[in-house]
Length: 424
Ligand code: AMP
Ligand code: GLY
Image (cartoon, rainbow, N blue to C red; front, side):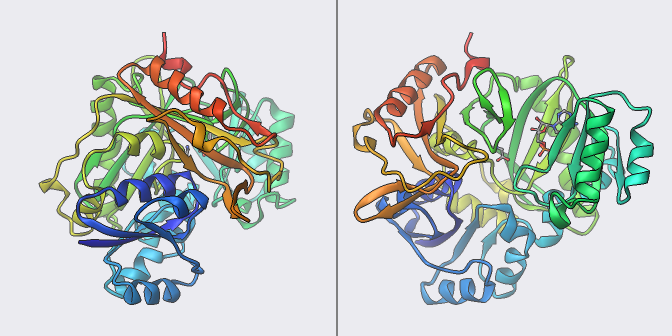
């Protein structure tokens, strides 16, 4: 039986830990630090650990006989958690620091894509304002400007005209709006089409595709308003037809895994390709994430039927080719409930009511929550993701919103149209 430690505190980690705890081969799941949702799950315990201290994580794993660590967020991966735990012979599912550069540095990702002929937007890479400004003078607008490093999903600006682009370049390179993350920038062509995420589990060479999914990154109904981490998601995503699926595998996923292996950085872990799909069904890579998507994880884990621990351990052993993955055929849809000011404000400490009133079969995944004096309170940002399954996407949506309506904390905010693009 396996003892698993999940690193992270968001909705993604709640969903991963919940699914792991249901595996027939898992006896105990720990989450560091977790949230009020993971604390309340049977078979799951939160642990207080400084996860930036890899030795402390190693010590905990030895003490509790943890034989699988699953890392949720990107920062510990970029910081080399997998390298350190692997060196201590603790199986840790995720990419090494070298491979995590696919997300940690947009310049690395773009150079990699170009070198291996993987489709992506045309771009330039800059460290000085004068070079960046010279590059944009004769370009078409809008144009996309990205901070090189990790910027918590905020480092991408779509500049509508030359003045906006020049101001953004100055903000990032001179005024250090994104700190070190923005001391190098990428300027790239604006792509049009439909966005989709394609997520796989990789073992350095082989991969298993996760069920298809699509999230809603814009804050407001109709996919408008500021960009967020994601306001809701559903799986499967009809936009990823069998034909597009095959194209993405052949033109993006296989060459990426082969290229990383060839460059001496084989990729093990969840690989998330953010794609723009044009009218002809051709995909270009917008970004890579080296971890599962949030909130895509929540509906995808709702559908997963295989034992996730077995798959992670097989991936670490380089044996994913000997495994398959089983999905519930039904649609899953998750609606994020956030604090009103999200993504900017920092409202918190509001008591959440009604979580015990959601209809049977609706799953409430926590993200920004904390336990306080016997209550569950908001801890800011995205607070919950309410998920439901049904044979019909519209019914899954209706069920998820029944759950949403049962819950209140006075300043909740959510979109009322999650899934609209897939519901005719
Ligand atoms: P990224 O973090 O690189 O995925 O960028 C965040 C969001 O910005 C994406 O989900 C897209 O909506 C948008 N975006 C990024 N790059 C481009 C591009 N080249 N063309 C159009 N939209 C983009
Ligand atoms: N939902 C988008 C992401 O996880 O990056």
